[in-house]
Length: 339
Image 1 (cartoon, rainbow, N blue to C red):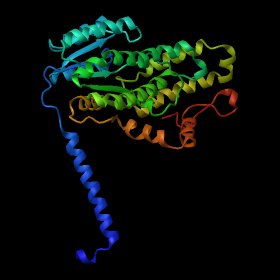
Image 2 (image 1 turned 45 degrees about the vertical axis):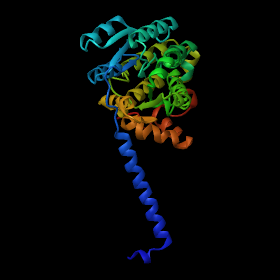
Image 3 (image 1 turned 30 degrees about the horizontal axis):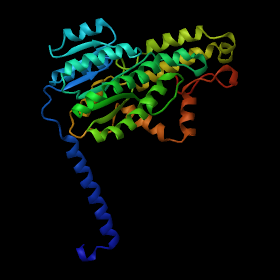
């Protein structure tokens, strides 16, 4: 077909397709640009006692960053230093303690020696009971919110002057529960809170050259989720319930709810924790870091889909997964529990 024979509609279609293709190519080229000189740039990482924080600290240390790794225990500090370069420094940090945070900030200020802080990676995981809401007390919410939300915010606020001086990066690691809440407790609350904090911070800090990224990761076996800890917590909470609440749920509910949690871990957990590491690395070394990263198939597809799906659909799926309390008069078993 000659150009003269092209209709106006065909021309518009070609123009739209060409524009989309040009945008994709431009984005891919832009996304591939990396910072060239990483030497001497300081990165502060919280919760390096965890497998994820520990792995990231070692990885960035090998890439030439001056890593300052915060650990909750002295044992964690010693183990990390024993298998890293001499440029990696460790500091004790209790995110639930303002005095501990202040001491860590003083340490970071001295280590950066007036150059500012290039990167802050917030990898905070508080103790998070995962159970029906009326099994919990307010202390159970504090145990996670004080660490994963308020502690992370306090660290960020106190390090902002150093980050602004270096025109650095803030990378907040947020579980997929920040996209979709499906169990009771403070864990999802902390992740939703960090999503909101990150969004407002990104808009405000862009004027100072500070870039803020969110890494929304799925469940990773061994590194991010521990089914044994979840089950022990459920058992502790169940034994602490009043007879009235226990009777309203029934013994079978407890057994089937525990099975459902175990089944969810098996279905959704990935083994390759490097998917999260690569996202965090890109957020730090890319010339133009992304606003959001999805790490793991469940974060990219399952949880993202549920977060946009109609509530009736997501509610139905969760009702099929988890059992019904005895007081509801419905069948205890969920459809998707057994695998």
